[in-house]
Length: 246
Image (cartoon, rainbow, N blue to C red; front, side):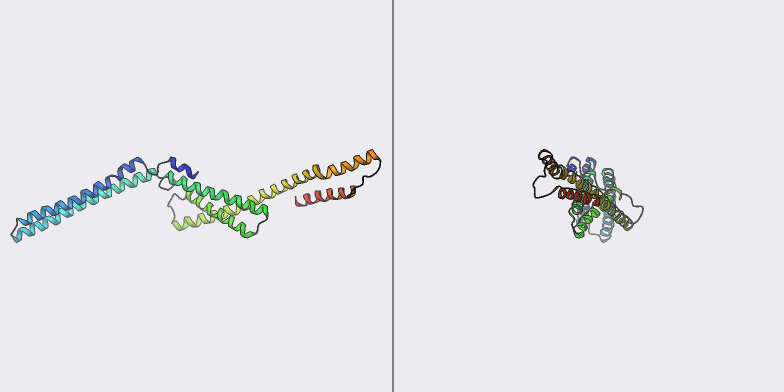
């Protein structure tokens, strides 16, 4: 899933076109400042009267202040428009679907392999230390899944959302643990039953049938290292062991 992000644009065309205006605004601001200073320098060079110099200085301050306010207003307008285009292209509180699906794909992979690891740990009877590592992976992936899907509002403080997501991730982790354990338990029962059926077909039945067929044809017991009684006891033991685990 994370590789699909290449098919989606990280930014909209309107945003990219608007972004080009920033350099124009900055260049216009700098050139305007330079022009004001150059005009002041020219007027100053032909002025010898002190009162005239004061008038020129006041004009310089006024022109510069007006120019600065105009430039700042253009930058504020640029920022407002930029934020508007960014919001239009955002997805679930992230800057774009391009970014969202990339991160969600990585988190989904972590979730899948963590659940697979937990399943293998339970089936193979691993210690709780290995199961804890798998549970940690599930908790982390659940945290980011909930974060990516639901953390799009600002009704409450950020800490409240983080705490809520942590609690939900922990609850989901415990649920996943017992769910996987339950399915693992059922799979284990099915595998043991299949194993019993396989033993009956390939071991118990052929042994008893062979001895019975030999006795029927030769009217005497077959000479073997194991007796019919021993075969029957082994068969009963396999059945009891399987039923006990169930």
